Image (tube, helix red, strand yellow):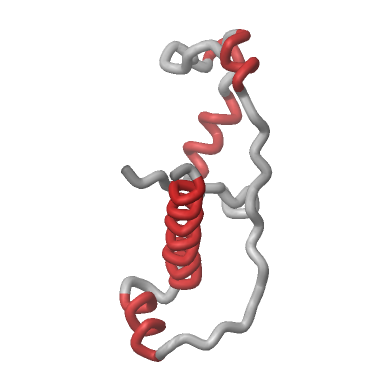
Length: 104
């Protein structure tokens, strides 16, 4: 099973229409339906661990033209993030492999 981690960028909020913004602004706390969100009990907080987001580091990287074209083919916007996701999954797989080898 593959785990996908996603950290939303607080600077890139989802775009709402003016009507949606007005409806949201008009809601009081009592009007919000929390019935589909389980209450967080003491067991949750006992096992919770803070997670620090892994921030990106700007780098200059030489890649083959064919690799760049492949990632840009699905959209020029976000191609660097897609490349980073592939590299990150490779690193995680290598770490898992190293851990398995240490446990042998």
